[in-house]
Amino acid sequence: MPTSVPGEQATALSTVIAAIHARGWCDGTGGNFSCVSRLDPLELLMAPSGVDKGSIQPDDLILVNGEARVIDGSGAASAETLLHLEIVKRTGAGAVLHTHSQAATLLSRRALKVAEAEPAVVRIEGLEMLKGLAGIRSHDTSIAIPVLANDQDLGRLSLAASPHLDGAPHGLLIAGHGLYAWGHDLFSARRHLEILEFLLEQSWRELLLPPHPRP
Image 1 (cartoon, one colour):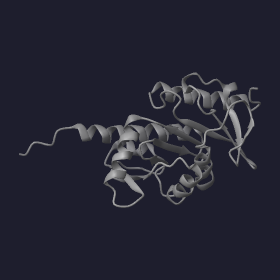
Image 2: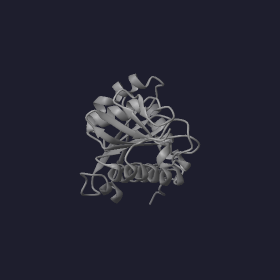
Image 3: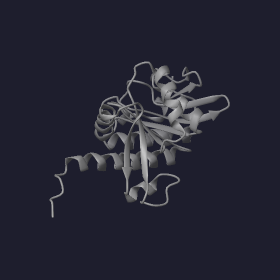
Image 4: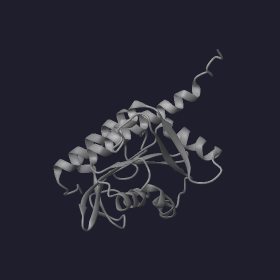
């Protein structure tokens, strides 16, 4: 049965999901996306697990409660709902967007391999697009996106991620998996996702450039 959630929010989220899919950041049935529908008790509006995110319609979305159980709509909640809930509870986010882009997957895997201890980080500095992240006013700065090892036990992964969320630049990487980005509402979460994906793509392409010639 379709969800009975407010149509405006469902339409906004399904539109954002379709736009993200069009960017090639959640191919196949990859990615999961949520926004807070209610705070007390906590409820998230989400895309169900295992569906093509390019064809999501507002009526396809589901509501889950603070224990990651579906309370309205058809379909199953992703196991990764637990990490969405942890991010919302820890940061006060109004929306969480999770993508599987090539850049995020490759750089997160590389960062974890070369790190001496977890969490690893992907560090990005000196780029004008950093100013697209809330709280950053100058390109002359740097961010360190935490990178955690992937884990099929999402309860354990959520607990591992929790202490790193407060200081994260509105994003977290899971090695070999992808990016979680968030914001105080759906608009800011989408902006942070687009900015972080740009920065990760830039970092990846820099690795492909030949070394600077010696003078």
